[in-house]
Image (cartoon, rainbow, N blue to C red; front, side, top):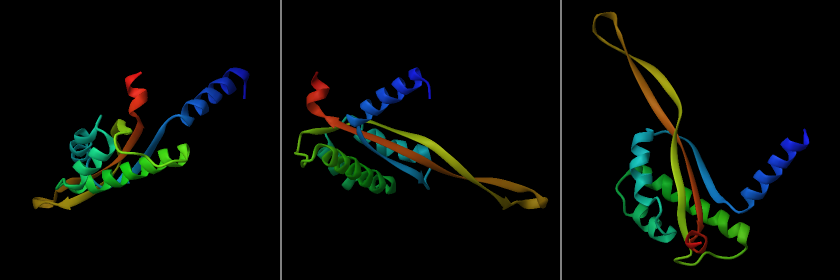
Length: 134
């Protein structure tokens, strides 16, 4: 590895020490449905977002709630203390498409209709509200 590449890698490692997040991969629901849930909590205070997700009727909200709890736990692990109410907020959260499962459904007159079973990846980062103000 060259010097320039090593310096870039070291800078990325330093940046990761101050980011706290979690990833949920290969969720078997469409990205469009997941984005509806994710848009509800983007930018919200973390414990308020947990409340929103807990009382949402959508199936995807259960998975995002578990992901948010994981991101909070990761923050607590790196900072070696418990998170207090009003301290964390959902900094960024985004949904990407994951590989599709493709199936064929029999159709009239010897044809076949395509069925695309979509899945997604969700990435969520939390941060302290103090750093948001700066």
